[in-house]
Figure 1 (tube, rainbow, N blue to C red):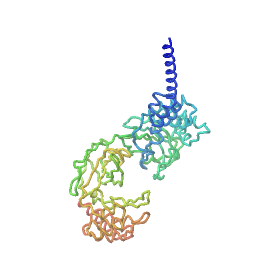
Figure 2: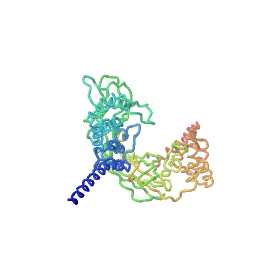
Figure 3: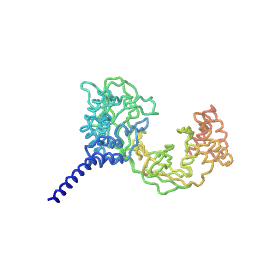
Figure 4: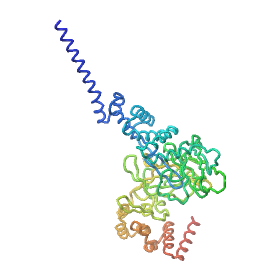
Length: 503
């Protein structure tokens, strides 16, 4: 009997200790998992713990919602509020589930209003506009949560609905491969408005397309406007906005509705070039799929510099003038290096370092460079209607033209480094026509930021070139124009005309 009593006592003590340990684990383990960032373990094993609300909120931070991954495209340029694509820690559906769970089970959570705003934007991503609008309305009435975007989103969401007994000034449909694009922002900006930055969505008159892709503008004054479309990048990936009919919209003062359809067309497919590296005398053959609506095509070249695996920095972009009726084009590398570029685009880096676009000085496809090539399709009215390039394509595999470093000089290196005075001195010592040409281009562009080019100095070098190319003559024409020498400008124009006739 004594032995049985001891065993029962031990059993009771063991059960008590197990209960204590279990209770301790319920409180301590979630905190340890939280500190280690093991959010999924907490959600699975401790869904009612003291840190679950923090986990539900923090785990959805990495999901890019509509507010910071919009892409705006139009005649004035392309703008993004965040990366086009980024690996996400979870799906939007899972993020919505966690935020809905947070709001239902933890209504007094310290960041509950921010969680509501995040959920509202995720609802907009999923075209759940009524639910998004309800949240924005609720937040707008909360004096403890002030966010100027709430009123803006409420205003834009309301534009999905047609106004009874009122005639819109402009209406239309946004289509992606003839399928309606719902939930897209459509902004109407005056043609003369600056395009250097993208203002907030409601800076200009802005509406949202309904479930049928339809949009309507009411009460717009007569004048010239351009359309800008805003949507989540995934909605238009692999497509290009056709500029036909949207580049410039002239609204009259008459009481009538003007209609315009906005189309995103499927991208042209390109074929990779045949060689990994090209020398100066090599022919670059470019091939692409045919666009049945294109009257002709143009080739665009953008210098790229590899930053990391799969990531690229974009430099200068140059649209070549030739119109190709067939879906193919051929250029020698040397032809590209002497392609007539006049202008000399310049920029200042964040650390106040001045640079001239490399293509303007060294030429397109200069030795040892890489260039992403793009083809653009145009209709009979010269509207750009298609492209082989995705918007804001900075990552992944690119259609590249890579040139051999043969012929790259130390003076060229100084030019790439932005040390233009030193480069000029070294080009002077080289003394070749190509070196003289590069000196002229540097002087034309200017040696310092916000400083006009020295056109007279550029001419002294251009006039030394015994066998000027078309590009040299066009640069001379621009210099004579800047120096007000009409007679010599006309003489150069005559030579250019003769070259064009002989071509």
